[in-house]
Length: 125
Image 1 (cartoon, helix red, strand yellow):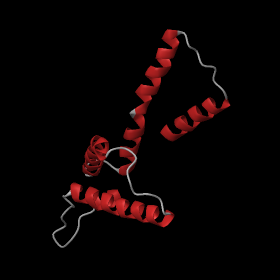
Image 2: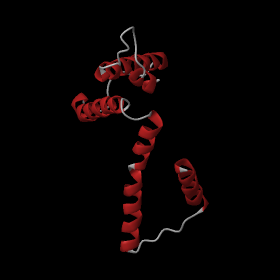
Image 3: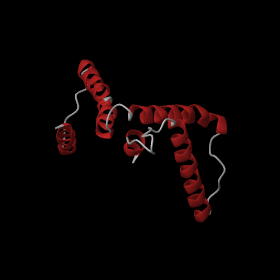
C-alpha cells in the first residue's frame, strides 16, 4: 500500500503524492487511536510508565526514519527497501561474531543457529 501511494500517479494531471510527512502523521494518529481504544477496552491505565520527555528522542527518530522510508519509495521498490533495511544488520552480526573469535569466546552452534542461517540465506536468494 505504501509503495502504491508513493509511486502511482493520481488525478487528471498524473501527479505523484508529495507530502510524506502527512502520511506519517495519518499513520501515527491512526495507531494512537487504535492503541488508546485497545487500552480503554482492556481497562488498563493510560498513564505512561516513564516520563513523557524520555519518549521524545525515540518518537522523533521514528518519525524521521518513517518519513525517509516513504521518500525512498519514490526511487526504489518496497522489496528492495526491505532488503536494504534487513541487510544493514549483517555487518553488525559479522562484527559481533568476529569479536567473539578475537576474544576467544567460541560459541558452539546448535540446530537453531543453523536453521536461522539457512533461513537468512534462503531469504537473500
